[in-house]
Length: 210
Image (cartoon, rainbow, N blue to C red; front, side, top):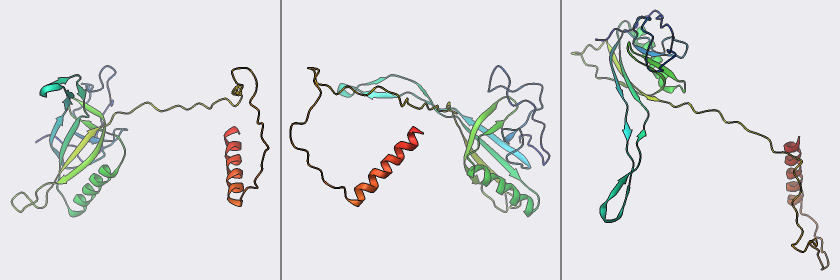
């Protein structure tokens, strides 16, 4: 069984090393579990029973003539850590533990998975499973499996406002003569709905200019 965190907040030390995001500082004590970005436990359990990590890749292909295919790239997919927690104690202890698990899965926050050898600093909890509880396995001990997924944080978008002093579009014909209307101009009064739409459009343009 892995060494788990107790009810006290562990001293996790530095979250990341300066050279490699996936290698822990060997000067800190080994820790197992799911933690918030500030180093506090996201889930406090009696122990961390097991840990697994899967890092899938895929090689896309596209079909060619006569049943042939061509492989053209190798794509890295999100990593998938998996933690199994156990929680014993009173009903209140087990209830509080399950509430922490549920809150972590409901959350959009990014967590850190700690192991003695590696850290996974940007994961989100996507699923949990209360494993088989029977009288033989100990009905008073809860074992919960949590599935997590790596999240790539993209750069924030930046927006720029367009200039309102742009040069007007040249509508002259190739000969240099402006377009002219040679027929009589007929005017039709606007309907109430058209008048309201025109006022809304003018108000929107005023907001954009301001």
